[in-house]
Image (cartoon, rainbow, N blue to C red; front, side, top):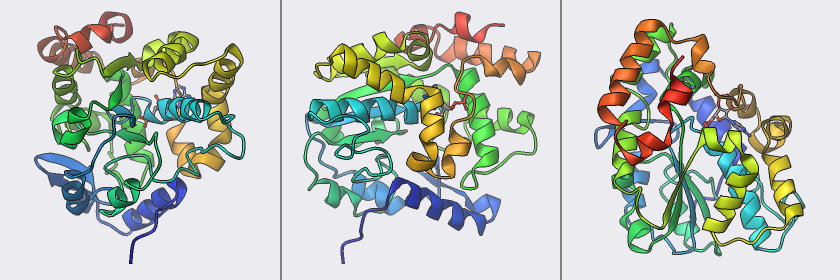
Length: 313
Ligand code: A3P
């Protein structure tokens, strides 16, 4: 029998319940050299993903964990509703809770791609995967990808708090332990620096638009307009204001019980820039600055991150 889809909240709640009865060392598994959460991903799903058939009009959001993917998902879901002549938030439009499939591409059961093949366009999906681990058809069919990046110090800070509050991820006794693992590539979904290096190879492609968490924070209206233009979605001033209102940190946090269930309390933490200043030691700043300089600074994505502005004290 075909497995049925699970709601966003249902899938997360089930994963948390399963993780609660697991040992810490069972929470992650390795697939092709990268760690993933056992309760969310599986080798069978990764295998099935290889033959996923992307469509040219799929709307894909790619981002390393903790880069603000739930935030941009909210924006994109509303823009898609607008493109379908629906009013975001009205009964006829989907929100995270009601989406037809759990939006994270690599999360869920191996049959989800079969179910997705029956969904009408445009389909929306999010992924934390590196480009070389995505199905080939995404690039062959020129699906449009919004690549979201965030400065590494805030990503690490957010990831630390998230890991300690979410049962599906290993928790850490101290921030120092987490930082060591972050720098030693022992994170779920792999190393931040390698993620950026791999995506940098695609940064010039015209079907890929890169945006930073910091620029959306700085100028949300311009960011939403640019994203809408990239996906070819015309937007009135009134629609723009609605999207901005619904995607503000305050609105999303307030609405999170409905959209994300108890997971919302974990996810919507501070929603700002520079929280790293509260946690990084001098020595950790130096180590991160050095790694960034050596691995990312000279790349297109590295420059886009404005590291000196956002990551120097
Ligand atoms: P913090 O932990 O720094 O608060 P992801 O969705 O990829 O897991 O990223 C989570 C991060 O995005 C969290 O960062 C969360 O607070 C932030 N975030 C979520 N919604 C947001 C919004 N509407 N505006 C700004 N930041 C948001």
